[in-house]
Image (tube, rainbow, N blue to C red; front, side, top):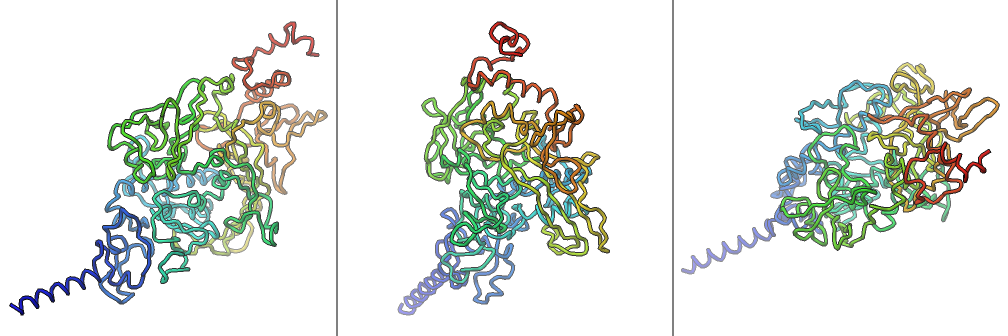
Length: 618
C-alpha cells in the first residue's frame, strides 16, 4: 500500500513538474520563456496558443539553434511566405483577402508607374505570386510577377516603390520601418524598428516590433510608416509639410520643428478637419478597403468604398442606412475589439459599395461616427438640403475639390539611372545592376490644378510623375540626358487625380477659385497682351514646357501641354475653363456662396443686358 501511495505521489510530482515547465494555459514555457522571460502576451484571444503554434521551432530543447530550427518566417511568422501555415490556420478568410488586396499586390502602383514611363504592355503585374485571382467582376485572371519584367521603370519600382508594401519588410529610416504580412499593421515597429518591451533578451534588437503585444486596432503611426512619401497623405492628414525646407536647425540646434523619415524635417500647416476632431485613419477607412474584399483591383479608387457622401450625404440624398440584424454583418464581425459594441438592430450607414460601416450609424435622427478605439461618439454633419451645396454645375465636382485646404504637388522629378552601379532590389531580394538617384525641382501645396478624375468628376490633380531621365549605360556612356520620358506616345507632362487628405471645414472661397488661373492649369498665369500668350515661368534647365501648367495660350491659341493619367480621366476643356471664369462676372457683386443666383444656370447675355446690370457694363 505504501508503495502504491509513493508511486502516486511520484506521479503527481512528475505531473506538477511537467505542468510547471511545459504547460501554463497551454503556453509552452520550458525553453521559450526561459530565454524570453517577461515577453508580452500577444492578446487575450491568443491565450490558448503556444509559442510554437505561431512561431514554429521547438520548445523542448534548451539549445538555441535547435529551438529556432524550422521557425516560420524567422522573426515574423505572419510573413506572406508562411502566413497560411500560421495566421491562416485560424484566419484563412482574412489572409486570402489581403492576398489579393492592393496593399499586398501593389498592382495599381506598378501599372501606373509603367504607364507614366511609357512602358506599359497591357499585362497586369504584382509584387507577389497569386495562385488564383479574381477581377472586380469575378473573372479568373492571370497576374505576372514584376520581377519578370525588365525595363527601367520596372527596375525603379522594385528598388524604390516596392519597399512600401505589406508583402515586404523594410527599413526606410526613422518613422519608416515596418514588418511584412499581418504584422506590418498589427505589430508596429515604432520610430526606429527596435524592440523595447520587457523581454531583456530582445531589447534593442532591430527589425522587431516595439513589443510582443498585438495591436488589434492599428494607430496612425502605422499608416505613417508608408504614407509619408509620394502623396504624403499621412503627413498632410496631421498637418505636416516637408517641402523645400532642408534640414535647417530651428530649435535647440536640431532641425525641426518635427523630424520624419529620410532625414526630413516638417513644419505645420492646417491639419485635416477630421484629424482636428480626433479621428484616426481607421475611423474612416474600412477593413474591406485596407485588407481587401477578395477581388483583385487594378487601381486604388476601385478598392476604396468610402467617400465624403457616404457619411455626409449630398444635396439631394441623405446617407443610406440598413439595420444590423445578421450575425455575419460587418458591425458584429469587425466590432469585437471596439470599446463599445454595436447593438442589435442598429441602423448602420452604408458605404458606396452597399456594405455597412462598423462604426457609423443613425441614432436619434442623427448620423453618428463612433471612434473604434475609444468609443467616443461624434455627430456627423449631413449636408442634404443646404443651399451652398446646390450650386449649379457643382454636382460634377468632388466634395474635396472645394474643401481641400492643401494638396501636395512635387514638380520636376529628375532621375539618374546608372548601370555602372548596383542597388538593392526588394522584389528579387538581391543587389542588381542599376542605381537610381532622384531629385526634385519644387514642391507646393496651394493652389492646386483641377481636371476630370476617373469617375468623370472635377477633382484636384498633382504631378504624377514629371520624370526627366538621365541614363548612363554599363560602359559609362550617357544614353539620355535629363530627357522627359514619353507618355501616350509623346514627351509631355503628367498629372494624376488625387485626394490630398487635408480637408478643411471651410471651402475655397468662390472668388479665389473662379479668378485664380492656377486652378485651371495655367500655372503662374503670366499674360502678355503684346504676344497674346498665357503661360507660366516655372521651368527647369531642360524643360520644353513649364513645370506647373497643364495648358497655355500661344499666339491666341489654346494649347494643352500635359495629360492626365488614370483610365477615364482627362484635362478640362477650353469651354469648361471659360464657363468657370465667366462666373466672376457675377461673383464680383454676389459673393455669397448660398446666393439664390447660383442655384441655376446663368444666362449671362440676358442678365447682363437687363435694366439693372447694363449700366455697369462698358
